[in-house]
Length: 126
Image (cartoon, rainbow, N blue to C red; front, side):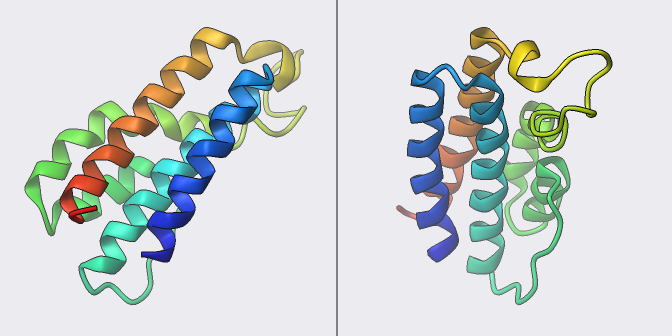
């Protein structure tokens, strides 16, 4: 439950970053929320060591316990694209994350993370 609680707290942080127009960081935190929510689900299934950062891979793993979570995999996979390039000035050609990630991109990232978070909350009965 600690992982899910942290995912929920991070979602609030993503909202604040979005409202503060830090769209690149809102995208990164959106990826983190989905990652932590999926890890929460996997730990709740009895997994003892959940490693990795890929939302797509974590969805695939979670689907081994609940096939319904396979439907999230394709939808949530774009969140993986926000893990590195949103944070580092050398992650993008000839620009920096603060200039590239826009409001519209951050809105979509938050929509995707909410999809994952709400589905995991539903599956965990929270």
